[in-house]
Image (cartoon, rainbow, N blue to C red; front, side, top):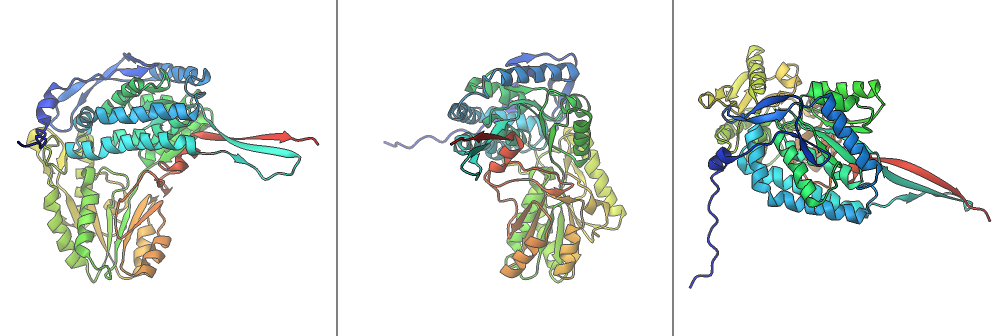
Length: 501
């Protein structure tokens, strides 16, 4: 008699999608709340209407900030011992995994990413982030300064108060968790403004947090447009700090809003135009090409750290171009609700038009299309673009200078190491970079020379919650992830005691 466990039946994601019920109301003070206005949310998969979403504005933001302030001031969360906050956040992480299929489906319907990755990457990473900060909070110690014997100087970290978190649409859950984990772990209250393009999982996460035992008012969510809800949150005098992830253009506005209001702390994680530098001495160009294709086409290229500028030595460029072109067909867009799909839909029609405009610009400026370059699956009513590779790109072309946020790669040839470093650093951005070389001296030398927050060597995008994420130049300031994120959501206080005797 067999004792083997029957295989679990494959999930029919399309059927589940037809049964999905959307609640787009705000969550303020632990309750679902209607907004004065709403907007219609459509899925980028096929244009279907998902439901009505609260169009938050000044009124809703005022209510959310007031709720967060009361919760912070009365200490219902901030005054709990770190070990107590830890237990609640651990339960929060556990419940995210309990609801993994629901959350993954919402993410895919909302912003078009393949369901396989929404489940295995986005949900898993979100739970892991919350879990990690829960574990970390009661292991972070304060300090005693080295004073003379007549004094005791304590240096302590205190929660800031009310944190405004504004996150983008490309990784809605993950980006939210990078703010929520350290902000909640350190005792702050949070008002989260998700992108109007992908608000669904943020609202559901807040409900799950309440189920885990997070007190009412500590985690509030107000959907809405950036120029309405986002601006109101960033200008609000009751907000002590803003954690923003998004475009450099809006990041500038965050700094302006701070200066116009209460000089609140602003931590910007902004755009990128990451360089991927390949030297002829690297001994596995097949793996290099596969890694590059997998990285630039992952999440439809809608990643701030996407390696969108390939710098390859002229002696191997033709051979490498063939290897890359052979990889592109593996990433043809398909139905995101099909578990086999590896590249899905762009988030909306506006982003589709933006990406197609860049592709047209590349051709107009003289670059040649090595693969792709066309809209795909237009008959579905969704927003799909073929994986696109340009050869013959100059570093001064628009497609090499500006962040495209789509599946578009620019291939640029270089003559020597100095040429590669010069062009790689010739960018307004400095988020990530990668160098591929089998010579250890060159790998270290070039990694040191590249101006970026993270430099990968002979790999790309290998990552962990334990390392900081962020950039230099116009890619932003401050760091998400790792223990360094605690610095963004706490204030240092010195307490100086005089000792007589």
